[in-house]
Structures are given as structure tokens and as C-alpha cells.
Length: 473
Image 1 (cartoon, rainbow, N blue to C red):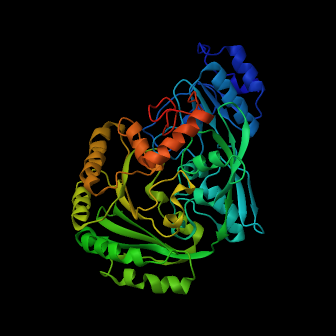
Image 2: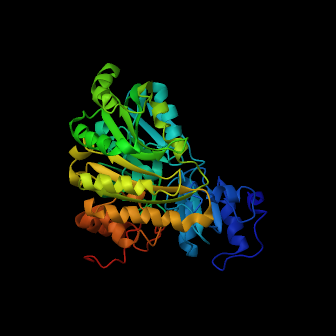
Image 3: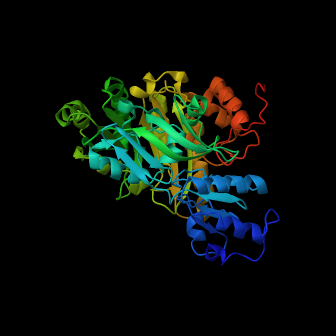
């Protein structure tokens, strides 16, 4: 294992010695990387190019034992600790400066058990990995809308996705998980074993430990009826008002997302993406009014494999570009709110930036509010303003556009936010983390944080700080 750190810098952090690093490397089944080592830059590079950080150590974990040893090493030496799953989250918390980064991406084991309708996957899997295995058996679970997203981060924050109105959020489909806690123990959490930790992990993010594997319920999903209809920006107001009336009466099998996008020819459009996961003939009937309205400029809705539907939005989120997002759950989508969105998108400074309106409801809203740490189950629409552009030198104008449109939409917000869409500081501080949970759930999470991680070892996340003043007990 010494070869893996042979290219390390000769200068050592005060926190640990060269001998410490060598002994640590020898204790791992996976690989330990330091700055200058082959593979170091690739391991620290994530999807959002705005994040450029340099850990002192990167552990490319081969299994749960490597995670245990990494947590213990970081805690003993007082190192900042970050955890990388898929590396797709916009905030960039997966990478730290000067600390230890646990890279779970080599951990990609998946076991599907069709007879039990479950699948267990290691935390380095992306949804592309997971769907590849489960779809071999005609099965799936709610798994985001971009296949490059990691299963771990998405699930721990809740997990919006195409199938949520039918089958609930990703976290609603968890049956158990294995987690390494701040004191270096590997524990299992489920409805019957460590149930409070299981509650917290379903929406509480990475605050309580490093999850090494997840077991999900999976459901029969074969071909779906899905795709997109597109309208000109001039017709976007009418199309959104139609969707506003159409969506609440839609069956649970139907998920929709409206998005302001720029087409390949530079024309600004409103695209309405759909996924109908029930019988195809029924989906064709249900979607007929949406396809007839306008009529649209384009209509590519058709029967397709679920995996193809999952990949439709991926070209709009290429790796290696600057990303800055802001988001809010919407209280209502009024005529005035629609006008603000259209006017704001007319001024978008990048053809790769977008504004999305995701439809919730259905099974998401029927889960008991106190069943999981995920909050805001009563919201019907979620707004996501996505700034994506290539050049670091242009950051200011793109960030200002995202912030300006988000500010203009706040009168129509519930005040809540989806924790997985929280971005970088200073925009997303402690108050926004509280807004992701609401007062009662935040206080319950805070009490559990003080129990499981009183020293805030896991703080490079959307952090619930155990030193917070709220109702200390």
C-alpha cells in the first residue's frame, strides 16, 4: 500500500506524521491518496467545477472497514472529514480542504432480491448503477432524475424523482441501512433496530454518520410512457396555467416537471417532461389533454424503457461546468408568479441555465409527517433555479441572475427548501438548514445529533450543529 502514497508531498500536516500516514495506508484494503499522487486530482474533482478543494488525504474505500478506520483516523487527528458518494451535489460538501475525504465511489456492490422485492446497494453507487441492476428484473425505486447522481446523497436528503408520486421518495423506500457513526461503530438502522437513527437518516442528510449500504423496496417498472412537450416562451404562460389545473387531478402514476430551457437553436422554451409509470394505454389516455394543448411546438412523448426516461435530462447537467442553484417549495403558482418566472428567464445569461418546477403530491403527501425527517410533504410544487455556465470569470453575473430570480419568487414560497438543493454559503447558512426541516423536526434532529455526533465530526454537510442554542437539553 506504500506505493499509493509514494508521490505524496514531503511536507506533512501538523496533525499527523509521515509514519501515521504510512500506518494508516497499510491498514486499508482500499487506496490512500495524497496531493501529487496518481489519481488524486481525479478523486477530488466533482461534477460542480465551482468546487476546487484539496484534501490532505483521500481514502478510496473498498468497504465498510475502510470507512471505520477513516472515521477513527480523522477523529483522532482532529482532521476535517468529508464524504463523497456520487459527487453530484451542487454544494460540493463531498470535498474538504486540508482534511480527510472518504471517497465511497469504489463501493458499488448491488444485490437484487426479486422474491423479496428488495435491493441492497453500496453507497458508491449512482442511480445509473442501481437501475442497471434492478431493471434486469423489471424493478426500480424512486431515484432522482439524473442517473449520474449518487444514491447516498439523494436518499439521505429525501429523494425526489419520477416515481415519487406513485411510490414515495427514495427515503420512503428504505427498509434498512448500515452506518458508521462518529465513534467508529458500524450499526444497522431500520424500523426495528436503532429506529430513531433510521428516522433521522431519512431526510437528515449526512449529519449522523457515513452510510455504507442501503436496502430499498423495489417495484415493478418496465416501459413507461414519457418524454416532453415544448412550447414557445410566448405561449409559456398559457401552458403553465394549463399544467397548474391539470396536475392536481393527475393519477399517482404520472410525474411531471415543467422547465424553462434554451433549445439547441438558441430559442427559449417551456418544456414539460412527463413520466407515466402505469399501463401504457392508460398513460396515453391520461396525457392526451396535455399533448393536445397549444398545440405544442414539439411532442416526443412515447413508450420507452424507464432507463431511457431517466437519462433524458442528463445532457443538461454536464460535468465540469460552474453551477450555482437556489430553490424553494412553492405555496402557490399564481398568475403573477408565472409572469415573474417568464420575465426572469428572458434575462437568463447562459443557454445552459434553466428553471424547473417539480410536481410533488400523491404518495409523497400520504406518508405520515412524523414518519421521516423529510419535511414539507404538503408542498405540491418545488422551484429550482439552476445556473450552469462554462467560464469561471463569468461567475458574478450568473450568480446574480439566480439570486435575483429566487428573491423575486419568495412571496410565493412556503419558506421551506429541499435539503438536497441547498447550495453554497453564504447563501445557504444555518437558517436555511432549519428551513429544510421546520422547527419541530429540526429540534428532534438536533437532539439526535447531540446523541450520535456531539463533537460534530460530520459537519461538512448541510449541518445540524450540536452547539446550536435551540432548546438544549
